[in-house]
Image 1 (spheres, rainbow, N blue to C red):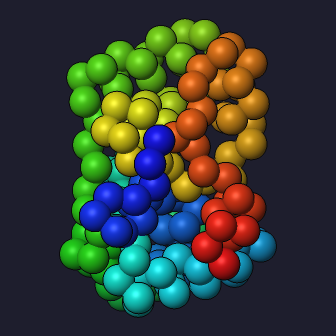
Image 2: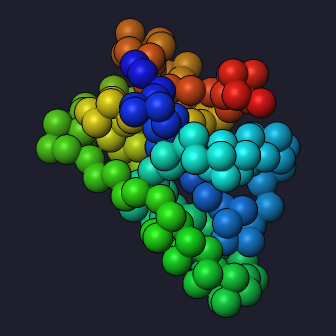
Image 3: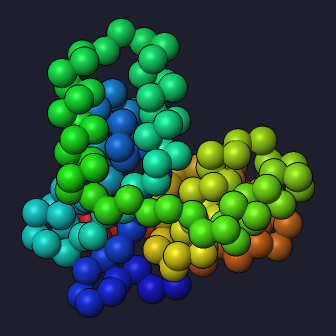
Length: 154
């Protein structure tokens, strides 16, 4: 799986990297966020988001106190500065298949399957998902772990 297209690093960002844009701190994400910001400012990063990540984030934010203006600005920043990446029909079917095989988080599966079906690697720190996929023999070449991302581009 190629991380770049036309000289830019293409990445589907997991919810972890979108939460801070909406004002929610993520523990130990500073280094990865700094690398993402640097690459974006240099014009080397083409970031993508999944509408399922936004759904997941809104669910988390709805359970806490939040600054509505910050959330509004963050949502606008994401939808204007990143490209939405929608699953294909095959991705929906793959996520259902993987859910049936035992992984409980359907949103994580939809993000993984969208990444696989579109060829855009997903940046994540979800070791549980990665271990599950490896345990059942799934191709994880589209999954870029945060620590590897920071080593590659930091």
